[in-house]
Length: 212
Length: 316
Image (cartoon, rainbow over all chains, first blue to last red; front, side, top):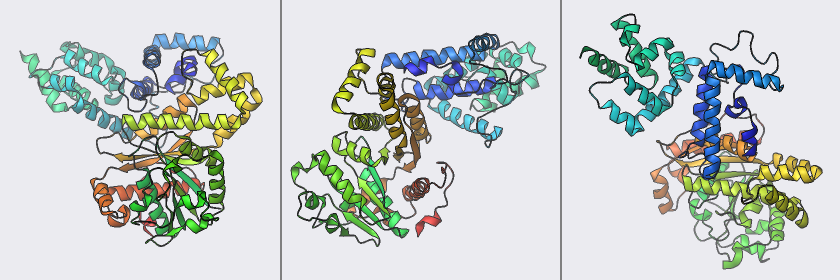
């Protein structure tokens, strides 16, 4: 317990210093699965206080590392106390696509398993199921679904290759930022599919609303 | 020398005897001379699982010195190459063996001439169960993907390691350690072996390193049984991960065995499951599991738990 609290954020999440934001999100999600309140894996292993402390620490680690500015400040502090040394980070800052530790697992497979997991979460989550019964879906509905699944927009961007600015525009209902309606539709579809939703279904309900 | 695998798990009903019996059958069918020992002394029923009713001799005959040699208690089973020392017909107080009786028994067991000896242990965290784990420094834990089972498993594994520390240290040394641990962390129950080891290293570095070495030599394994389709198939791996992270213990995950309604039917018929349902998912899982454990124990590298096994090589 004590040991965990003394670990730096990278150790805590079990990642290298030069991982991409995508890997950070994945690692966070993996760890969250272990420690959340209803996790079968860690059942009875911790007291409530211990569990809350671990989760708070995980949240702090994620919030720090996923934010580019905060991360570089944090890295700076690690360098100052000699934990992060020259050469541990690649020259140009960080790897662009270093998806998962095991090099044998290809990128596509990783994304596929994530999608399968997300699909399972979608079908078992009551809040999401209720949102999906609406005739029209707004950006904020998608954002809520994403919140329930605890997937960051960065992950979606890496999975779909859709730029962050468009993903944000979708969630904020700022349609004008998309180059055209056709593009918007394909972006919404990609967004939805990447988090385990039915792309066509979501995109049509999202676009329907625009006509109102 | 025989490979001895104690098989236990914190909770009753997880399928320890079922796994012991059926893995034993699979090993025997591969022409390994295999002995099953029912060490679930208070509630023995391994004989029923392999289809042998009313055994006429048992382990207690050795403990009570009716037979001077352990070999004399061995029973033939209907399956070639498979032998049994039954735990049935015990006196009611036999569930509480003295430590010396257990070491004597284990010494006698280790001298037996078999390829594999599987020890079916009782549930719970009584010293009877724990000592068979600490005495043989290998062993297989059986657990179900359910909170109750996982809770008891965590309890058992912590007990095993702490009992081992207690056995190596002398009485007053262990008391000193327990006091030091409590003083550093008042108001909490000391049940984390890694923490105990850290404190020990602070107050007695030499013993600390010695015990750490002994504990690291433990090669415990985990099997998840009765895994349903809706269960997360990776849960076993995650359990091993979290144990390493928080208790500082290395446990290797060996695989899942699927839940199968027909296990119940077969138990009611008092027949061996893998023989009766050779092509069921549970049997396939058991075959893959047996193969993996054998490979790991014989050091053929670490067989990844999720590659598709070549089942045919095991049918024998």
